[in-house]
Length: 359
Image (cartoon, rainbow, N blue to C red):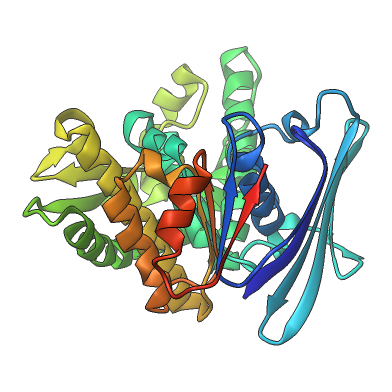
């Protein structure tokens, strides 16, 4: 699978940009703030229907305009696909594949797998559990559409139950049958979510440990541990046992929406004890493990986006990472950097085709 062309219109600071791409390494160079990262984010948007950096779709519209349009031409398993994504301030987001509009964006997720490595990945370590849950959701949804369906339905029922709990705290008289109906839905959907996340963490952990050992060239022991209330109790038990607590807090206090992953190095949280270099290596290894697992399950190489990779690794390790393209590990790679000279010197050492776009 590869992306042969991408067109950006009013997407962030790109008023109108068009790039013909190669099935190799595509490097975007230029000063900070010129829009290199935004090209990678546009690719992420086309693949996963959302920005990697902005939670609000409207924030991706150029501030002098009222809409944006993205177009991408993909080649996958001998078939060609044209993706178009458009959004205006007055209408809902529209995504089309070969001229046909998606009714549900969830039907698109996983068709064009992508993995991004970015300086903002540090949030996986320093921020709260919601960031790590988003990593789980984004990863699993790219190979299991049933997971995404269960997650959407779980979150819908969770929102309704929380609204009900708030009404009860404000004096509304709600019968137990209504609460039990939401409890049933949450119990049914949570089982699939929990089992999928548990399996994913178990499978990615060994791959992650392999990459960390290769990149770090050290003896540190790293590990991922899946933290969930459902490790010890069923969702049905948790909802019944904590109903009174939920009424007081006006929210559902237990369930997969509270899950987390412990990121561990030498039996301690890397957030507290890992050096900056160790944390960067930890994150790159985790994303490479995600890449390998997605390829293994989907039987297709994801697109790899490396945003400001020199922020994470020194030149030697970046060279070692990109040499994996020569070995067939990656297929199509996108890089951003501030130095065209550095990119040229690095890429010309490889046998892989590459192209440099100066922005």
